Length: 119
Image 1: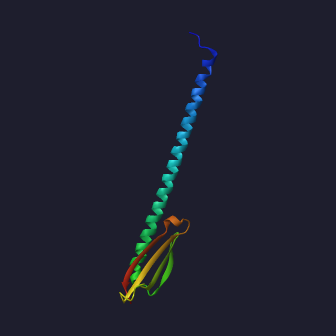
Image 2 (image 1 turned 90 degrees about the horizontal axis):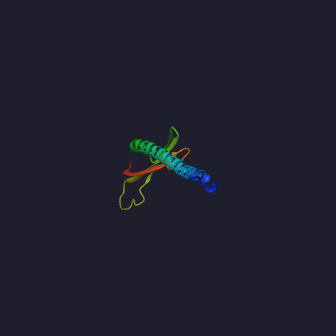
Image 3 (image 1 turned 45 degrees about the horizontal axis):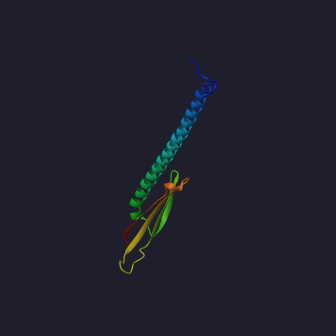
């Protein structure tokens, strides 16, 4: 059977449609992988900032009222020691706040708080 002229171009149209679908799927895959990589990077920064904050929190037991600041790599940390807001009901307590801020990314920022006996 001899194909007519309309069927000759049909294979080309099918191939173009298949390539278009594959391009859309590939673009979605690349977008998903990029999003996953960014999320992984943000989680790693958050984890590192949390470790720095916990380390500074252990050091905060010795910090005088007022606080201290410093740097640890791309992170800036701040320890703030103040009177506990409801000191009337719990005299002799101080609130210690440790903030760790990522230099380039706000997603890597952490804040921890604790109470300690006043010095």
